[in-house]
Length: 446
Image 1 (cartoon, rainbow, N blue to C red):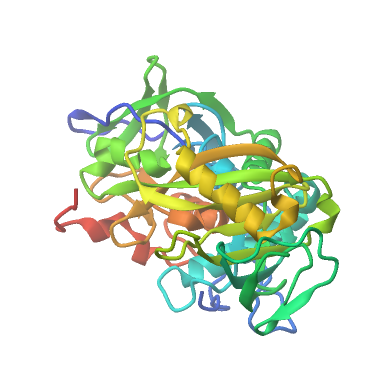
Image 2 (image 1 turned 180 degrees about the vertical axis):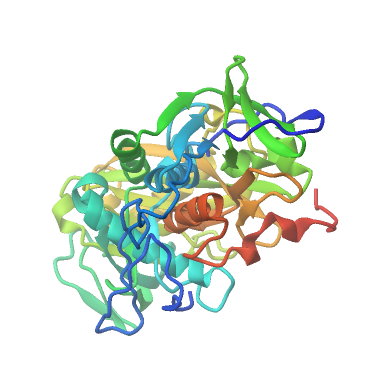
């Protein structure tokens, strides 16, 4: 903990629920990465180092004082930040109101893509994080612990008004430039391969997030507190403590506000920029014969029978034997408590129709409905995440607004936050484009 600071003490915040690519430069590597030449020039394999510096310290080096950091928010962004901070040597306390990965980080699809953000500002973040996912999987036994696997990803068109699927078509068929897997026996057309096993993958997001926090606790001493963040206190323009609703005070040198869609309910953040919630729905099915479902992610152009604009649902088979379908998203008011989030029956009904139209194996009687659910994705007005130090406040950092790419970009965001807080700058990815300082002087949308 840093020493006392001159100036008045201030308190910020309201009650808040705490949940919720270009090529990497070879000349400046993060301590979390090691470059390995690869026969495919488009890929960079990332391997996490230990929390020690890449170059062992000499006897002349001065040991760094352990920094105390409190991370507010138990979703994938908060957990990744806590994990990499602790691995890098910080003493970390993570605060979560309800349960780790109880909201979007537990109910998302878990789809990962290397290059789908290429050409935009998120490109380097996405590429670094995709490869960091691969390395984490090798280190944490991802295939067994949280369903990490590479995928083939298809885009296809399907019309609900056409003939229903013929049960259990046994052979694959070709439409467009790609072969349709045999379990997709609905009236599909215009099939294209949009990702292969080198560029797309998946995790089970809840299992991934909880595996990471378990390792952070067991290996690096992270402490998890269940409690509702009420406010943070400052002294002399510097972060001093996080105060919980029940009166507990957590003193630390720095705070990471990883509040997901609840960022908009925290005054310290909402006064600077807007984070709003996009409510997304999903169902989880368990087919009677899960071994018949191959690892193909499907991105659909779906034309409902009643006409109107096509929908864009997504289908992700999981190695657990389940099949996850999502879609039907709309901006909605974020409730105070993640436990209060309920699905809209109409949206769930549409997803069930999508399932049985895509495959007879996913229809009623052939697959058990395991879950019907909704979650809120945190979005910003400029469609970019907010990652970095809050302007004019020392020791206060934010990581939020990752929209539908939170699971993908969690690891690189967490590693970047650890470097920024402990080293003074991020080496894994340039965070300047994501800095909250970009909102200073802008007229905030409401």
